[in-house]
Length: 366
Image 1 (cartoon, rainbow, N blue to C red):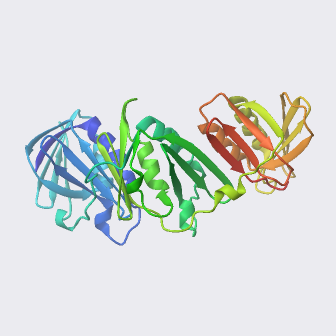
Image 2 (cartoon, helix red, strand yellow; image 1 turned 90 degrees about the vertical axis):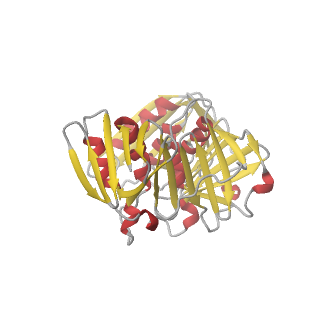
Image 3 (cartoon, helix red, strand yellow; image 1 turned 60 degrees about the vertical axis):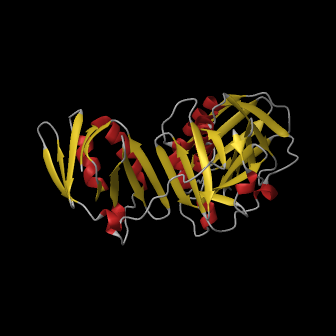
C-alpha cells in the first residue's frame, strides 16, 4: 500500500473516526483504525463492536492499493503534529512508514484479516432525512441522555416514526427532551418491531458529520442494527435493548402558569445565579410574581445571589427550585430567540416549549 494524503483531509477524517475507538478494551486491535484503498479514495474504519464508522477520504493519490490496521492514537498524533500539506503513507505487511518533507515515522500495525467487519449501507434506505434537520433534532435531545446508567435504554435516544414525522426522545430520569424531525421519505414496513432506541454515541457521531444544506442522511435497519449514511461517512450501530420509559405519562397537562422568556437573557441569569450555588444548596430558585422573575441561590459558606428580570405575568406567585445545569443545557441548544416556560406547583416538573420541542425538568428541594 502506498498513498499520498492531503494532510488536512486526513486529519479531519481521523478526528471523527477516532472518537469511536474505545479507551479501554481487552482486544488491542479495537484501538486501531483500518485503512483500505478503494478506486479513488481511502476508507478509514473504526469500531468498538457496538458502534462503527466508515469514512472515505477522497483527497488522495493512490500509487499502490492495500489494506492496513494501525494504532489510532499514534496515527492521529503524527498527522495532527505534521506541518506538511501532503503526507505519504506506505505499508508492507504490518509495518507502516509515514513520511513528510522532513519527517519519517515507522509504526507497527496488525493483520487486517483480524479486524472486525464494519457494515456499510448495504441496500436501499428505509428512510431519508435532511442532515441539517437531523443534526438539529439530535442536538435538542442527546444532551438529556443518561451518561452512565444500568438502565441501558436511558443511554440512548428513542425513535418514534409517525407518518413523515420522527420524534427523538431522551431522558436520564430527572429531565426529558423531545424533538421532532420531518422525514423526506419513509418505508414504515421496514421499521423494526418494538421501540427503536439508538445509542447516544452513534447520534453524537452523526451530529459531527460535515455536510451542506442539501446533504441527506440515508437510514437502513438490518436485523438489530441501524446504518446511517451521509456524504463520506457511514455509521453503524447496534440498537439498544431494554424498555424505554413511557414518557407520555410524565408530561404535565393542564398547566395555566405560562411565561414567554428570552433564551439569552434567561441563560445569562441562570449562569449568574448559579455562581454561588454548591453541592449543598443543590440548585437555584425561580420566584415568579407579577411583572418580575427572580433567580436566586444561597450557600451557607459562600453567600447568596439574586438576579431580577422584568416579565409579563399576571398569574399566581410561584417559587420553584431547579438544577441550574439542567436549565443551562437546554437553553444552549434552543435555536429560537424565545421559549415558553410552564409551571405548576413547586413540587411539579417545569416544562419548556419552543415550537415542536418539549423539555421537562424535575424540581429540586431548596
